[in-house]
Image 1: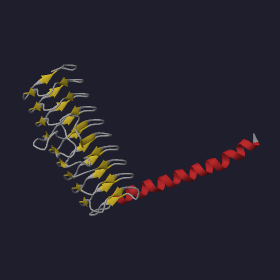
Image 2: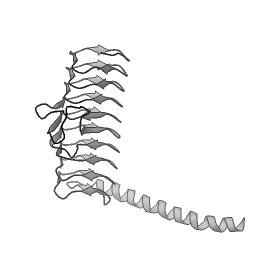
Image 3: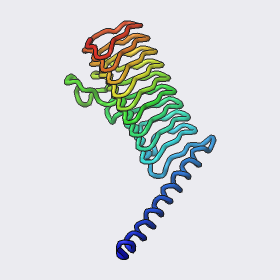
Image 4: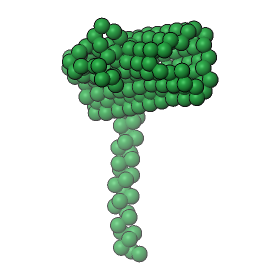
Length: 232
């Protein structure tokens, strides 16, 4: 019993020291983040020197920002979020933990202002389409004031002559998928696990119930309501 106690004491001391170190780092992060007129980049983040960072930007621990990335004023990157490729974020966008925006491919990803990219969402990566040819440019344009929730995926276009588009003021709930070359309008609500195949057009003020599946090349008109579990 005495030998066990002797083993526990240094381990407890080490854990306490580690906890205090983490707390100190966290407090330092919060304090620095509150500075006005400057941007804070956590020491563990990897930011390429060619990246363009606006004012009042907060980059948390273990984030990655690639050489062609551009971040507008007031953007926030929570821990372990990443921006790759030729990607532009407008002002006051928020990337939650684990979010990935952009891809190291020809083409670009453009995200407007006041967008929230949820936990582990993947936005602006290569499409899942056999007609895509490696090296072709592909594009994604996202408007303003969209909330893209956790584990959602939105892919770039399949060809350089097309683009994937998401408009303004859309709520895209958890685990949704918007495939290549889709055209999404404004003020739509996609409930959890709504799946849109390639080349789908969704106009404005559309609501989909949970687990809705839309086949490629379908066209959903404005003010449509699709019940949960439907296949279009």
